[in-house]
Image (cartoon, rainbow, N blue to C red; front, side, top):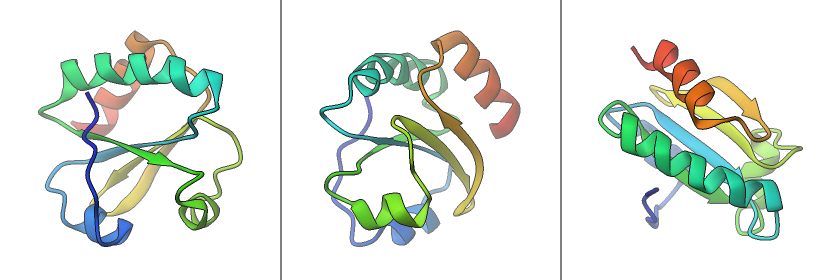
Length: 106
């Protein structure tokens, strides 16, 4: 399960993480985002030691969505050492997503 946490700033959360962060930019009204939530639970179950899954509701944080040029939902952005290194738009099956992420976090 993705962790629900309050944070002072997004940048603070990125820089304070000792593992890569997979940020799920989503909205509660987005159907494909609901599908992605279950897929991300599988990702977290298999890769929880290698990365953290963080969900950002773009309705609540529109400035972050603008800053990272989120135009489609869901959009996943993998951050390593505070920098975005990969961007995935739309729904992707769990096995393909895990395979793709493993090459990026190892």
